[in-house]
Amino acid sequence: MYNEAEGATMTNGKTATLAGLRYFIRTFGCQMNENDSEHMAGVLVQAGARPADSPESCDILIVNTCAVRKKSEEKLYSYLGRLATLKKKRPGLVIGIAGCVAEIHQAELFGRKPGPDFLIGPDRYQDLARVVAQASRARSLETGRDGLWHEFGPEAVIRESPVSGYVTIMEGCDNFCAYCVVPFARGREKYRPLPNIVREVEDLARRGYLEVQLLGQNVNSYRDPETGRPFAALLKAVAAVEGPSWLRFITSHPKNFTNETIEAMGGSPKVCRELHLPLQSGSTAVLERMNRGYSRDLYLDLVRRLRRALPGLSLSTDIIVGFPGETEEDHRATLDVLREVRFANIFSFRYSPRPLTAAARLADDVPADVKARRLVEVQALQKSIQLELHRSFIGRILTVLVLGPSKKGGRLLAGRSEGHQVVNFVPAVEDVGRFAQVCVTSAGPYSLRGEEALTA
Ligand code: SAM
Ligand code: SF4
Image (tube, rainbow, N blue to C red; front, side, top):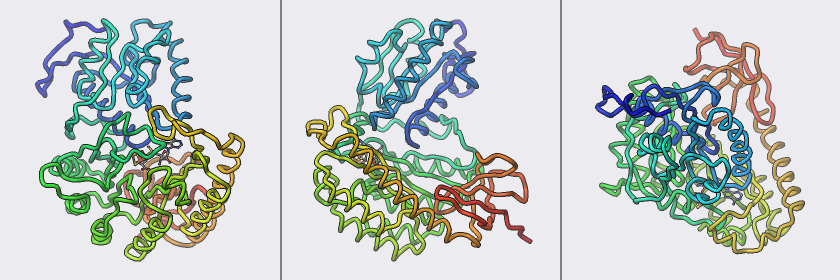
């Protein structure tokens, strides 16, 4: 498929090694992975490739993987099975696996038949065009880390959303929570220079973006590598950029949340009154074994301080059930915290042992049926809390960032409120990529429904 004669010099001075080829990227995982895929797309476009609409119509197919939970890996392997059929029909198709699974399961992936043509780890995306070009001749492997920050710059990002833009501020994680594979897959923390972050936000502002989401595994441990200025200073610098009206950041670690950050949030109306603050467990004993670095009381104290400084703050969290040694009492402690904090949303998971982690050496001793039952209890309780919270919005007018057509169909549009609730509504005008004032008319546990209020 790759023809060196097709190489040409692009307007940006780079050699268009992939000119004429079409790429398709399938992303598994969280916003960080989505943003990585946007960077990979940027690198491919700079090398002359163009996006394809489907795996069937592309020349280069990249699967961006997530290794955080066993379930995400299982989904990946079933997807790879389907790709094997495609490869049989079109042997010229170059298939690559990117991301965390590529980094930690190299031998297993290359051992598959037919295996991928290349593997590329999360720290190597700047070399993607070269790796793809090589892979059409021989299997190619690009993993490992050099500990340096690799700047992509706004010009090398092909964004999925024209309304809300992700901006990566740091990579990796130093926390080594006992259950988590991220520090092994993505390496130690490294921070993006503050001026580069501001430059990217300014670029989004010029292009009319209404929302900016700062991304990192552990955003509030951010330090500008040049000056040492902390996350609070970054937040202020980004909030000072004229243009985008809403600013969010994810993920924050409770143990790194400083008063300075709370003040910086309170000091700018642009910082959405919404925060994802992973709890993981409501039991101090389990938190200790997880190596989370905070107790239940410290977490609850932080929630109180945040709510005092930021009235109306909407909180979401992550919960793991069935961590090794979790007793019924520990589980009830988690349910108690859910009742006390009344999160607006939670992401809840059954513990699964991950390779290389400290917890993988512990006995996975909570039986599968107990984990399943605890997960159901957590989700049922949360569902009832969310329904109550959502019903309290009925009759109120919310500002909604309009993102696109609603999954509910009809002429409904969908967007997010400042508190990050999904709002499906009957629009007054069809346009997306704007803010709308929506009167909430009904509510379910997972979304709100309303009608756009006519403004004078
Ligand atoms: N850095 C963030 C943090 O500190 O919470 C998020 C990391 S991880 C990508 C997202 C979530 O996956 C975690 O918060 C945790 O709840 C869940 N998770 C990670 N490892 C897991 C495991 N081995 N089993 C079940 N859930 C896991
Ligand atoms: Fe994983 Fe813990 Fe780091 Fe989050 S803070 S990425 S859970 S090690």
